[in-house]
Amino acid sequence: MAEQLTRKDVERIEAEIEHRKLVVRPACLEAVKEARAQGDLSENFEYYAAKREKNKNESRIRYLEKVLRYAHILEDASAEDEIGLENTVTVQFEDDGSTEVYRIVTPIRCNSLQNKISIESPIGKALLGHKKGDKVEVPLPNGGSYFLYILAVEKTEDDGSDKIRSF
Image (cartoon, rainbow, N blue to C red):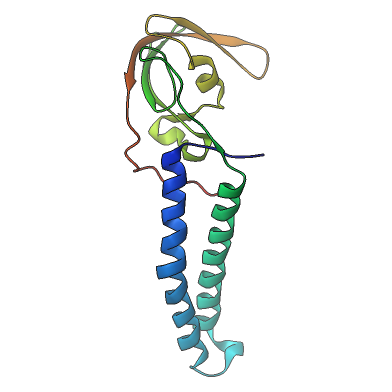
């Protein structure tokens, strides 16, 4: 399945690929070369560690290139007062009255520990397109649901600080 990315996500991935090819790859190759020069490879831990790092870097490059190759670029078409991509949303849960602040992001940048939720998550899907003051039903996988009240919607810009996740 194609990853859903914004233009900023694509720029960030391209920058990481370039960094890994121009900076990390030569450093890894040099580390392998130095470790190989130490002699017997059968008991050379430095050689195996350097090879592992080199392979890890190459694997990450291939992964990121594949993500870009099959990516679907998203444009935020939401109105100024509607919830869309990159919005920060304050919601209140109907059942206990607690409030949470979420940022709606692409799946590759979601991080529940930082309250960055994916547009593909149940809450993300339910919130998209709604406005401040709306009552939103969030369906649960088991067939139940719960309700949220949207207290605030704030347009935010992608500052580029999010890291692209590995899968």
